[in-house]
Image (cartoon, rainbow, N blue to C red; front, side):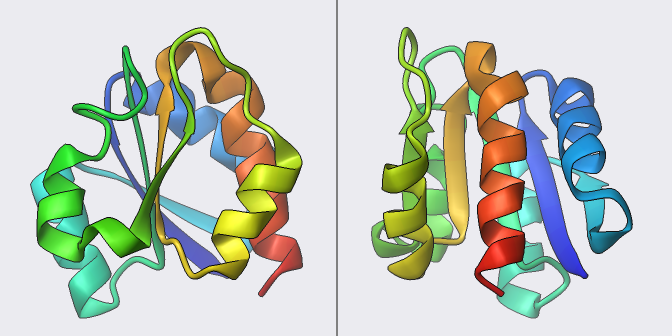
Length: 120
């Protein structure tokens, strides 16, 4: 089971999308960016998903500062759809913090969950 902390805008929508995609293979912890960063550092969470209007600003900015830029990535900016090949590349590179625009949650979160589960 993978543990995913969720923060930012539309957290409940993100939680539903993750649970629908991962079922009993995922545990979702709805939180905020500060607590999510602490959960990653302590091992209470394996990944963090955040959403905001732009996909990269408020979605993951605190985590970039607390976890480090090298562990964070925006998978879909405002007006863009996530790309499976790009997400796979970032997962294989060790990224654990994923930001996306709120309009990409329905596609991006399930795609990301699927990739994470297949790359365990």
